[in-house]
Picture 1 (tube, rainbow, N blue to C red):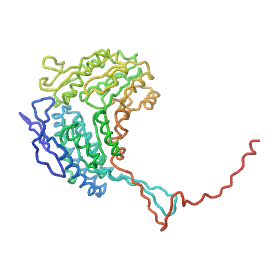
Picture 2: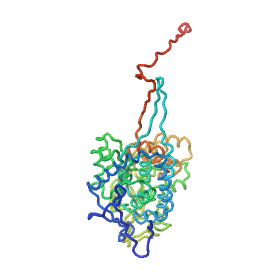
Picture 3: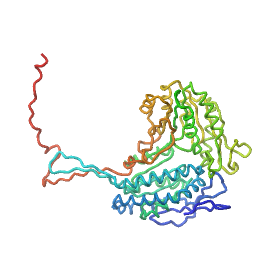
Picture 4: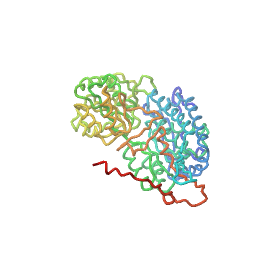
Length: 531
């Protein structure tokens, strides 16, 4: 694998469908993925898959699943060990390709590759720990036990903002548990998906265990894959994306009596109390709001600040936002690069109008960066890239639309509160409940925040963004359906519990009926003690 940038025009990567261990011949219908920082750079060419292709992939996965499930779990896990080593050997090349394909700064792209490495190494060990339990029986000569069994064929749909890390969270535990997969990657990142698929094959994953179909979402391969839940083509869906689409996935799965894994959007609060370390708090707010150009489901949306320190926080937040280095994601000094797609740019533009109409005050007026209107320190090509400057709204109320709705872009709201009670109320005003953070030195405030804020991820004196492979990741409310990625908790998403009872008595034993009678117990009379 060599994805390094070449002098002149970099090569275009062909990202074919991968079905049953074979590269599928190219079709006449295809799409290109262009570099969001340099729109003339055609990064990837991939097929537009339709119903027949998706059905073929589901059949290949169904055929391969029983064979793969019979492979002992520690042997399945060895593939993940090989995958981790391959990812490590290609870390820099893959990171640079991610920077080119989706515009993620190369420093963050390296972290995304490392997250996939960490995930593979974590689940390498879990191959020897897919534990069941032995359970005592109430009857003699009888043993009870439980086993984890694979779900079957898993349909996976992933976004483009984390084109390697998020797929690794799903694909790795799914195949470890004995499932096979049909994966529809984001149309924003088909090339990164092709690179990961190649490494899975090199790591020794058998044909048919991982199948990849490229194409669109609502009217393309994504919709066709989701439709297979109703006809039995797939047994489970694991989806990361918008809450609106997540609701549709949930409806389809509910009709089929299957439980999807839904990791959806967020409008994440970061609370700064009066006793906080303000320098650390502003660091966390800036990183949380503007890293990846705000294109994270865990990005800080609302900075909720005690009025006693709001002037200092306001001043420092605006100062730090003005100083951000925006531009070419291949550069090591860039804080954030371009937006991934025009649809995010459109939403960013709309959000400005929504905030102005509600009466919020623009401290920084984030706009599309042009050659004639570029902030100081801009180091990109404004004519070629989808760049925007940071936006900061002040005087935002928790009930305003901009405080409640997710916006995938570098924008953040300042909300003034008087103390902890109002801060918790503001932090829980949004129907999303993915991630939340608080900066304080008060241990009781930390405890109350953890108990009363219902987000799936809580940070104390740290930002809202950041995940580790051994910790559960996922949200509640509009941010998900309670399922979790990562750590041992994700195993419940890709296995079904099977209860087994084994009777060695040689006769029929009926539970609860043939249980021996209780021994006779003499009950003492304490009535006289009352006088």
